[in-house]
Image 1 (cartoon, rainbow over the protein chains, first blue to last red):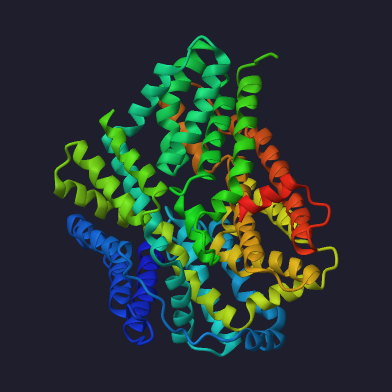
Image 2 (cartoon, each protein chain N blue to C red):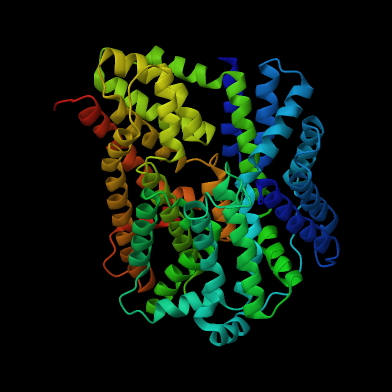
Length: 321
Length: 238
């Protein structure tokens, strides 16, 4: 393929590498050495992820965690523009300001839907297994070029502005990747089996409604632990839903699957373990309380969990009042 | 049952508000050691998973664009644009975004939204701008609340829309799972039976956005007509 996922990772690593260098040079950041080292090591995982042996990479990851976990990250000076200056600038470019930003989703969708089978000289244009991710990265690059043409500004300035955003996100940036690691270790350690065993031990198997509640609530809770409904679904469905709801109570499998997965999603809305949906956005939006997005979602999630229990009981199992 | 100690570490760590990175790393080490994995295997697992899951952090590559355009007044222009639309309120903007996000996700176009691409640069400033146009300068706590709700619109719309699309990852995962169990399911059947929950999510979350408008009005115009229950609820959301 011409544009591979690894190419996109290398570009991301280059951005992080420049952020690292700019941090080292930022005398206003009181923790510039540890902050710069943090972004530098993170850059290495993107630049050389494929060639560094995994156990060495494990050591790098632990170093990254220690730097960020014990308060090694600080804020610097980004030469930000004051509000009045930005208002003045907005009056110059007006709605043209939206063009680069809207190009990103547009190019991502075009790449996935229109150019997904495009070949040049028999070689696929986009990595066939990772079209969306490659298109997103490509969108970022094209949008940056357009942004620089519109503003007549430099790539260094753009990366320095992204350093302002990355420093604000701080440790939360790598939390999703660490949580995915924990999920893998949980799975290897048999956490899922232990939980589905607890559920099947305590639930009265003859009572349809009780099993429905146990499965839906179990999906939500296990998703909250794993941070990911995809990890919870096979374990809970194999342990609880297949033997008790499908074979014993005759549930419709299509309906059960759809509603079971959605029950897991209500858990995703309520857990810091789904950091890429809940914690990173809080950091991206400069919220001082990193749990505020979760707090905003909890009422909706609980109502939807109750709704799913009703749908499961009445639609998948033909329950009656 | 010993395997659940790792889960306990996570819960206790999050409750005590210890840095989540440390909590998660210690929980991983503990879980690995209890499963009698040798230390080098655990390190290998950390290294492998971290590298495999780099895709989760690709939003980094679009931050230079967002950051640069913000320097030239992107947020201010988004606020500006919204203040010219008389009928725009915070709640209505978020309802519209929720609807579009869920609809496009249901059509398989999940990459049309996102927190870095849409919420930070466009949706949150628009939602804040609509409130600002009505009530003047907003207190920081109100801005934070509006932003948190803007992020929730993206999540709810994405989650409960995407499973309606038959070729999405979740549907393929479930199809593969049931095939292994020799239980008959079809992607279309699973997608169709997701519709009741998808519609409920749209309605429930839209009602909460509608009520957000009411709570903003009470909060920012001196609390007239607010019941004590509503005030207490608003306070806990901050």
